[in-house]
Image 1 (tube, rainbow, N blue to C red):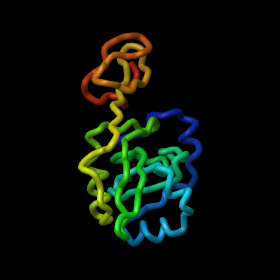
Image 2: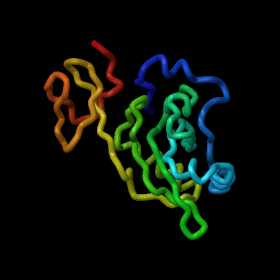
Image 3: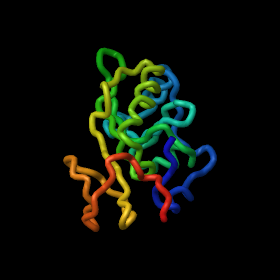
Amino acid sequence: MYRHVGPAELKGLVRAGGEGRSLRSSVDFGAWASALTPDELAEPFTFVVDAGGVLRLAPRRSEHVVCAGGEEVLSAGEMSFREESGRWVIDEVSNQSTGYCPDVVSWPAVAEALDRMGIRRPSGFTYEVVFRRCRSCRELSIVREEDFVCVLCDEGLPREWNVAEPDR
């Protein structure tokens, strides 16, 4: 489970009933998608997989913590869809969420939610974001090209996910 690690003021945006749309089946998704414009469907969506393993979607510019109703999640990121031969498929999916900073190992939760819905998916995130917290300066870092070094203080970053570590 991943807890919100983003700015506290974003968690203050959470309102009862304002969370992302819970989708449990391809029928749910089809009904939801049919109410969207082609322009809306062309944009990636903010997603979370909630504690119950249910996929929740919201418009891309939505905060992940709002989509999750302020709760912990199994995964979070962005995903886009396309229709292929009358079926919905995942076009792209990432774990890009600076509010939860989920590790790439959160993929199975996403895969299980999509499989239950009957939506075809890739074998993993199409774009993986590696988040780490610098143990020296405590800043959140995104690791690029396997370079586990903090861009702010030049300290080495841990190889294992540590974003939710408490401050010392």
